[in-house]
Length: 389
Image 1 (cartoon, one colour):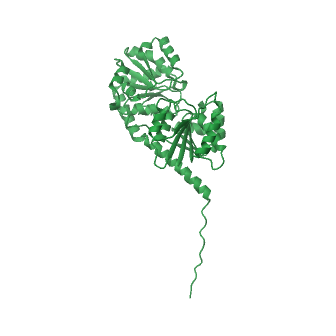
Image 2: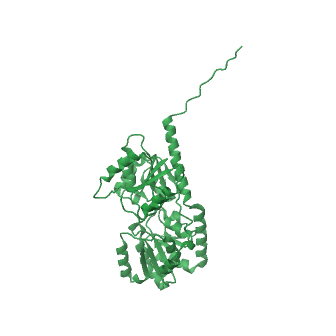
Image 3: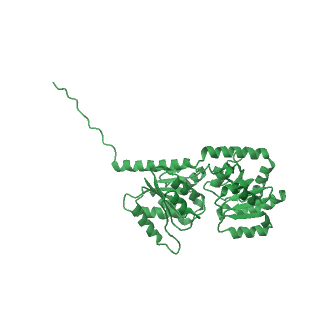
């Protein structure tokens, strides 16, 4: 079964990790390939896929090079995949249109939705509603996102399935952390409150910075560790200077070794306005770091308030600081949350589990297509019993 994973780009983001896992941890009967619309990617992406013998290419789509879309249609026509798995908004839009323009039999279309469609541009919302009925299967990654998709697309999707995400549990161990990097991150601070996030509006890292003065008043040696990069970095640096906390904030940029970053944190915070799910919560929980998130789509599925972490209203720096300080003040609560969260992640969120579930869905779609092509089974021919004398 040939499966092409089409994604906007292979840069930072949780969905990129999902594509990487689907392509490199596949079953023997699945032949994956990964195509990215644009050339934006993390260092080592091509080498990682090559080491796993997974074909990988970028189509070179950009605002100055829209002709790459014609190349997408040609590539699909030549590759003839059984399944085209679409990831993120542009790949879903352009991949669906390209597939529908092909002569039958076109590839089966599977679309993974990692963000609330209500947050998409009006173009993508309208396109999603119009194209939903042509997509054989939509996959969502959290219950609240599942409901949001059904509302946004007004019941048009043919089928929507929830598949919970997983992480590489083998690497989420404190023993895998680099002690030197951990020491550098902590910088002799008594408390480290950190996040791992793209520096984009969705992640609302500015709320963490707004909460930092209260955290520093409670413990002056506190350090705010921000791991990740993005277009808002310069604005966030300027905000830290404006608040007078620049000396207590470390902008670590993108780090391939996030295990060492988590190991340096006393509390993990993700103040997002919305999430598909929030893989970073699972990573922090597996590392035994207590987590604080916001009560929004996605995050409230990853974190059960008072059970595996704490949730606060979005955009409320005082509530965020209060939750963090509560974890430092209540050691029993902190240990209980960490133990429950770690056990739940290791029980329910292995990397292999969603890969197997999604590949099972591929096979089910293939079986249905074969059955439809073959038509209904023929009725058995009645045979009259005769007695020979």
